[in-house]
Amino acid sequence: MAYNFPDVFCWIQSLPPISEWETSSMSLNICSSSSSSCQPRLNLTVSKNNSNNHSSSNLYFVIIADCNIPIHLWTSKPFKPSSTTITNKTHNNNKLIDDEETISNLFVNFIQAILLYGSNKNSTPFLRFPNLDSITSNNFSDVFNLSFFTLLFLVCIYEAPAADFRSGCISNLKDHLTGSNLEEHWMRSLNLAVTNWVGELEAHNNPFRTPCPLFSYAFSTIGLWKVQLYCPLLVMDVENSKSNPASERLQFSLRYHHVEGVLQFNHKVLIKEEWAEIMVDIDNIRCDVIKLVNESLMSQRGVGAAEKHFPSRISLQLTPTLQDQVLSLSVGKSSENPRKEIGVDKSVEASFEPSNPLALKVSAGESSTVSLKPWKFEESVYGYSANLNWFLHDSVDGKEVFSSKPSKFAMLNPKSWFKNRYSSAYRPFNKEGGVIFAGDEYGEKVWWKVDKGAIGKTMEWEIRGWIWLTYWPNKRVTFYNETRRLEFREIVHLDVA
Image (tube, helix red, strand yellow):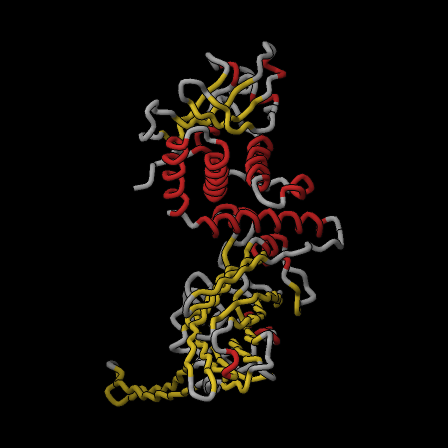
């Protein structure tokens, strides 16, 4: 079982003012190595300098291997707490760190230290981090702790003195980090910072664009290709939007989201007498729109998490990069046109009025039901590229959502399909607002025939994709709508054997 690590963020937040310290430092035990003969402990220590003047005290956070002789493994930059945190008698403050700036700077210090252990450390001093809007959410405390334990993991590998002590601590940390959704937490933290940064640039009418707003990667293994991507919604290209601007609160709700996408393909090679067949089919396509701030902040400054963009089109292109040995490409059939079934129920009710036996009251009614398959899948071929497309359609007029906008009547009609789109029984999304396309429902296999000369070699494929996100009002009464688009490109490999 993984070691039960303490909540570092909570411990730092609860530290008393310097005036109440009986010693020059305070420590928190992070973990101990039971395999070491001297039983060393790994501590996080906050120390003040030796100045007797509390008003000029600086704070240092230190990771210490506490054995017979304490060894400093990592030391933070000096932090000077704000004047309101020095004494508690005047300001009725019982915390050492009560200002957001200090804890935000410490968080950035963790990230900078982590990056310094990377191979591209020469560029690290030039990175700039924006101030965080809020550090009070539960989400921030999770990411803060995650960043600290990531730093601690690297420090133990590179700085810990004894092999047995290092091994024990790394083992505990490894289990702890493996048990958490490290990648998702990390990318949500990073994209929150990117969103704040771009928002600040836009507020000052700065035309500068982020150099690489989207992070994606791919890996190839036996029988599987996978692409993972993350992109802040604010940096996606605007395809079309309503000229009327959204309200300030609606803008806040719409901008503090990002896209998390997963593309998984199964692949198989069949060796024939005349050629080799390379077959690829869809395992899972997932696209989720995830909020970057907590529910409380979303409701306080925005209009709630119910107002957000939704996936309206996903387009993928699979292409072998070297095509001299490709003989042919075949695709399966596309899905049928959106299915609409109309059923009409007619009823007649009759009754006698009790006060008048000769009076007959008759009423007639008619109701219709409509069933629509909202997503349509299409496969097509361009050269030796296989194109896979998923389109979301308006259930009333059949128009593709990503390239159209709802009528004003539909925007005001509370029974339109895109109203309450995350809770209605016929919603085209899951309750979180994302979509999942499984191979058994959307898409058949794609297969290339290649020359026998490719057998025994490794072939390279390019997976290129575009994702459209659209906003139409959900529970709000507004005429604002827009569609944004992101693009990615990754390379995967396959052994023809």
